[in-house]
Structure formats: C-alpha cells, structure tokens
Length: 473
Image (cartoon, rainbow, N blue to C red; front, side, top):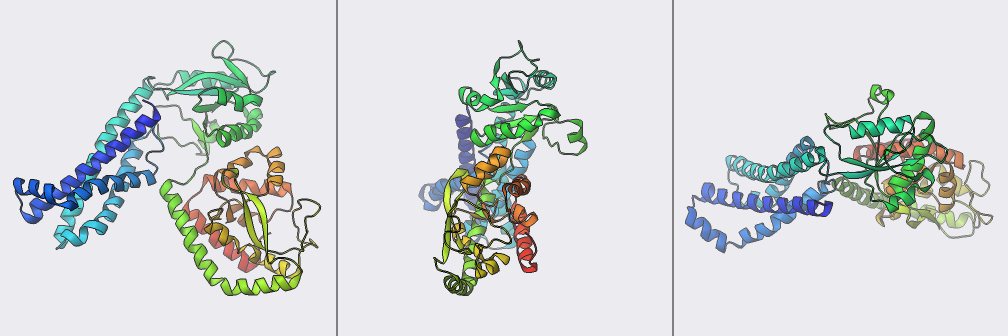
C-alpha cells in the first residue's frame, strides 16, 4: 500500500468514525433526554435537518483537527503508544470545543446532563477513531517488521563502520523496514569493505544525482569520527534539497550523554538527524501569535514611528524607510523593511556589513540601532507573512553564498521562516563579518532543534531585556 492510499484510508476511517459518533450522541440524546423510542428516533433522523447537517459537518471538523495535529503527515512507522496518546489528546480537545460550540446550549439543563453528554461524545468518538487506527497501524507495523513493506535506503561510507552498520541493519529482528539498495563512498580512494555485498552508487560528490536517480527514502550515515566533517554536506543535500530522512548508529558517547531517543524497544537505536519543526497546529498558533503581537506592537509604536520618521528625514537626504532584498522561507527572496540608519548609497562599492565604528551610520541611525528601533518596521514584514517574530535572521544571497562555502548546513535555516529576533541575536548579537555569522549560526541551528511556542516567548522576553539594558552586540 503506497503512502497516498494509506493516508486516504486513515482519513476515510476518521470520517466514518466521526459520522458514527454523531449518530451515537444523537440517539443517546433522544433516548436519555427525550425518552424517545426506536420509531421516534428513526422519524427524527429522517426529518431533523440538524442531524443531516451534523453528518456532514462532524467528519469535516474532526479530519481538519487531526490534520492540524500532523496525524496524517507520518504514515509509516507509527508508534502505537504515541498514536494512543495523540488520539486521546485530540479527541478530548475536540470534544471540548465541539461540546461548548454546538451542543451545550441546546441540550444541557443540569450538571449531570453535562457529564453524561460530554463523556458519551468523548468515549464514542475516541473508541470509533482509535480501534480502526490501531488495527491498521498494527497491520502496517507487522508487515514492516516482517520485511513485507520496505523503504529504499543507501549507506554513506564504505569502511569498517559502514560494513558494521550494514550487517546490523540486515540482522535486525524485527526489521526496521530499511532496504539498503547501495552505498556511497566518500571518494574514489576510500577503503571499500562493502564491495560485492551491495552496489556502489558513486561518491559523495554526486550524492544529489544519486538521490535523484534512485527512489530513496532514507540515508544511513556510517562514518567514523575523522569523516564526520562530511555530515554537513550530506545534511545539505539530503534534507534541504531532497527532504530525505537521515539516520546513524550512535556511539557509546551518544548513549552515555543521553542524546539517543527511540520509541522502538526491539530495533537498533538509530539516531535520526532531522530538524524538529512545529506541528501544523503549533504553526497555526505561532502565526496567530505573530499577527496579534505585530498588530499590537504597531499600534503602540505608532507615535514613535512618527517621531522616528521625522528624525530620519531631517538627519540626512534620502527616504525614511530602507528596503533590502533578503532570502526567506525555502529560499524565496523578499524585501525587508527598516528605518534608514545609514547615508544614501552606503553600499555603492558592494555589499558590506556594518560595525560599531561605521562612519556610514547617521546620528539618529546610531541611536536607533542602540535600541534596535530601526528594526521595528519589520512587524509589517511579519503581517505580510515574510517573517515571524522569532526565527533565524534573514541574510542576503551574497552572504549566504559566503557562509555555505564554509558551513553548508546553513541551508537548514531556510526551512523555517526568518524572524525579527532569534536565539542567535540573543546569545551572540549582530555579526560584523562572515566568521561571526558562522559563529552565530550554531545558536540558530540549536533553535531549530528546540523550536516551540514556549521557546519563542522566552526569546522575545530576553530580547526586550537585552534592549532595555543596552546589552548584546
């Protein structure tokens, strides 16, 4: 069963479960609330437009809710325990919303009724949703463990570590589903211990072409410590360019440091190398938070905007606002908006980063930069959906090319929306050269691995504190 058909199966099961749950609560209401008999219930179902409306609206409501929880994004290799917890959580939240929005005023008369109807809806919705899911997931996992369903994978490396990794993957019981179709050598001179066991597909230099030519779902990294420098290139090609999952067997240090997390008890404890992004519903909340806070900030800062606009206009000839092309989400360019803090034609000789003693900065510009007031028009960029309140600072294409020459994994930052402030800004501050950009990069990568709404709030709070204390770089 391919991904599309399996995803459609899960959706159809959820649609059917939602319709049946609605029928259950409707019948329960008629019997308990009105004392209706079977004939009266059948008549009501045939004549009540609310019942027919519910049969259409409820499935749509629950499928959208499950989609927002990212349930349909990961189709294979589902953890049944995680699925249980997710289904309980979403069903409980969805029941609360549905109950208060559509049912409470219509049928609730006493607290006892409240409990009865709520748990009838919750239990029926949960059981009708989870039991079919459990059956499907169990069947799919069984086929994966028995090697019936497999996922094409390649190994990067060809020495003893690669051979050991290959043998451990092939000997796994139960199977992880990885079907190793070949390996990729570091270069032509690399030691080759996998020769004759599986095909050699080429070298790391042609990794992108190899992925394009083969239906690959997973890359297993098998490199010893001296070769780990190649991981950044693998990540850049595999994840950023082709969105492929990467795994590697952890070393003893990883196990001792507690950096290995796995939900599979019987399988090899492979570490997954993949940035931790927000779920759909978290992204929706983050976007809503961005819009609300940006609107509030722009309204509160309106008097300051007027004062700064006059000050900028009087400080030197030129426009009030400065627009500059930056690279945003998925490499899409956009114009970032700032209050102009430099003299006109400050970069007539080419791209140049500013510094503390930069004589291109005007007097009012120096004041604005001290309190980062020149950045405040970017709330408009947030409203336009070019940026978020929190995210890696966007750079120009010129400097991205300079950074990626030395740190190819910078392209991981392009998978998320850039921000007005960032963990890198809080911990490191402004970068005056490419070296400092690369130094700040590690904090932005750390943000990707720890993205959460709570983290965003913390970064915003620390940003305000740093500005008020005149700290930071």
